[in-house]
Image (cartoon, rainbow, N blue to C red; front, side, top):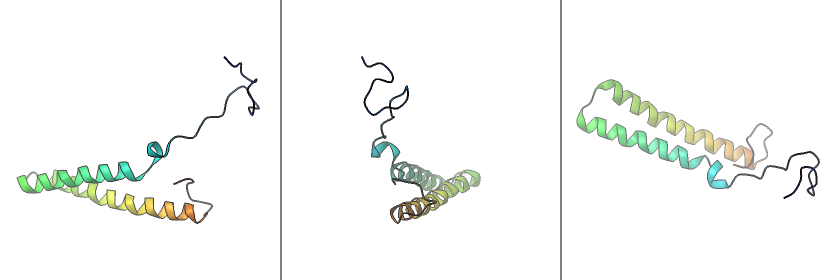
Length: 90
């Protein structure tokens, strides 16, 4: 087993942390799953004629999911164009 500080390329007592795999840090999958879940809930609530509070909550979830899609696309485009304020590696 390697001792801290004896590994090549390491300047301190700790090894560098490897980057996470793309599927674990991707933004599209959770946004799609969450928005789809709210959309399914909204359809079920509309079909069953449930309380309006739950219907508005589900509608807000779908709306915020759509806003999230726009933000993800905006950040991805900014990252690809090299904008200083954009998140990296999207």
